Image (cartoon, rainbow, N blue to C red; front, side):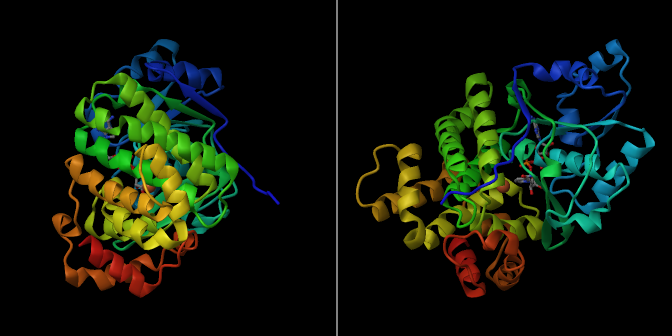
Length: 383
Ligand SMILES: NC(=O)c1ccc[n+]([C@@H]2O[C@H](COP(=O)([O-])OP(=O)(O)OC[C@H]3O[C@@H](n4cnc5c(N)ncnc54)[C@H](O)[C@@H]3O)[C@@H](O)[C@H]2O)c1
Ligand SMILES: [Fe+2]
């Protein structure tokens, strides 16, 4: 028997240069005062320069909150909510990578003052309503523009998720021109993050469904087919657009069929060592795939034919070849491949493994159960 409940963003606009008409889009939807939530890197890259003049032209008041930090802590969300309340914004825009979009989602939820951040961690705790929200991704990675999730760094060792359909924006605006200047290492790391979303959604133990499967496979086709081009030739707009769409489709898949072990083991690396999210994922991808082989080889082999068409042998052999190809992808793209390269030593492993065990929301989705000693072994393998 089939039973599932699929959620996604109501309107997904794909338009090169579409961000230039942001003000009009907000005004058309009844917005009278906007707050744009972004980070200093996006601001200094000039990505908002084309969007801002139209706010003045049409007389729509707008403020920019640009203090988002990567892997945003709760204090950044509090400050952004205060900025929204002070400016009396009735329309929120998240403009940037996953960090900016995740903060914007929580600002839209919390600015009305009915809910508190401390009360909404976990699944289904945020009830809304929220302010109207447009999300504009500038990385091709998290897919946050179509997910029900915001990730908050709550301590030096832990990230927590707020998960609720209330966090889906009204509009996701995919403008590939915004990603043309994304540095090669960020393109590589965020692109691998998106691939991991698709792989983990396709192999998740819980909530896998035919819609998420279609999305995950098409996402991988787009991502695997364009990642090298986007990294090597950053101004290839077609490759950039395919990456942006691929990341979005992967987001649609994993918000309905949730991610698992790679993310559970990656989060402690990000929280303790400030390793970017996509890179943390890429460091754990190979070991976790090998660990899952017995439980997931048929599904990995199916994905292998999309990522590396023509893989030969039994499904176990194909899955093993895929794990080794993906394990080496970070190195091919110029990223660190081992935990030691990001400052992690053998002495850190017990702590990381203990931290990973706190990620119960993700661990329950793993095709093979990951216990404390397994987590330690996986970190050792990645060292
Ligand atoms: N909500 C979700 O569903 C979801 C899913 C996965 C990850 N996340 C979270 O998202 C965050 C990571 O997001 P991310 O990987 O997109 O990175 P990010 O938002 O942290 O941005 C990384 C860096 O890239 C810069 N940048 C972004 N776009 C740029 C551009 N076009 N040109 C130049 N520089 C640019 C930023 O200034 C920043 O310095 C983490 O907090 C992670 O936990 C959320
Ligand atoms: Fe991710």
